[in-house]
Amino acid sequence: MPLPAPEDLTSTVLRTDFCDDAAWAAVRAAIDAADGSPHATYVSDPRFAGAGVGALIDEEAAAGEDDKLTYVFLADAATMTDPSHPLLAVDLYDEPGRTFRVPARWYPEVSANLTIANLDFADFADASDGSGTFRGWGDD
Image 1 (tube, one colour):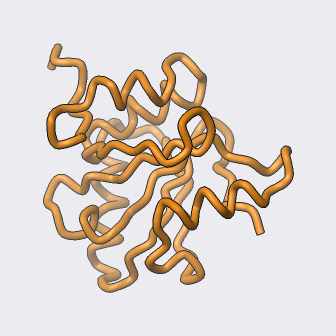
Image 2 (image 1 turned 90 degrees about the vertical axis):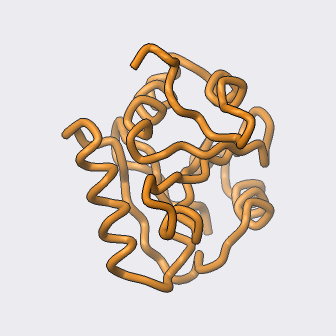
């Protein structure tokens, strides 16, 4: 079964931590409040509970060409518990398994640029800080 595809001009935010429904609601609210435009297709499917990067890569490898995603954002335990709600961005295409974190505040910028292929996954991963977190381009 392929990973859930995003709606047009959005990115898939895949919930992998199911410990706290209120935290999931807070993550969604933080993403939606970041710039007021829809940038996420939220997927809360228990079959992805605890899914790691390797499992997602395997899932994508088994998908048909028309069903493949190039990246996905995970709402994992770190996303749910950290006040900045840092999603785990996962490359599924160029460098499968490469990751970086992106706080909800910066998610719309990353999602929009990846969706329209204005920037590549590596552009954001390379601009991440020493903790592996993308915190904008430094002009804010």
